[in-house]
Length: 254
Image (tube, rainbow, N blue to C red; front, side, top):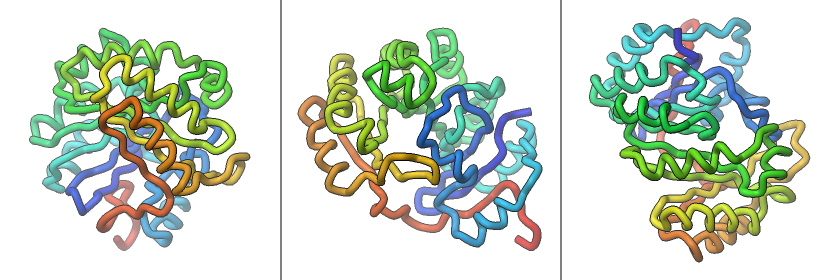
């Protein structure tokens, strides 16, 4: 059995987003605390999904059948922490056999050398490592974990055959422009061509931080560009292209 409990189809690039139950971080601003489903789904679909009381995770064979029926080109393995799923290498191998490129979203905490070798062998195409903070005290406060394995494993990934990218969330009052610059400097010390994306924070109900403004996100990206060649950003005013369709779990009458 896998840890997969939710799948959506993003039509504009013919990709699926795969959600995994469980995480080894306890991020104070994690959107999954508020909504465990894809936040890009229409409100009526989200309401129906929220009414589901018993999450049923998929077996590898069940997941394979779903993917074969979609004819997609790309699978984004993220939301929750996919590396906690013992079936992850098998999931990647199966997707590769179906000519589906795999993209892993991870906090990188347990991606040591042995694990990276397994993912390479399975055929993982690329990975985004979420670097929450460079300052260890800030990282511990926000996630409940030290960032030392994350930074060490990021260096290991840079030496692998897996295409490496990084991302961070700009959180007003916590992860601000100076911290983004420290992260950018760290990435540049390894390779200034590693792509870096800065996401604006979107508050959840119990978060004490406000939304990141468009101006703040753009300003942080300009700061990161002092050190890195390839910097992108996202904020709350940028809308997802195309339709997002719920694939699993199936809902009555749909």
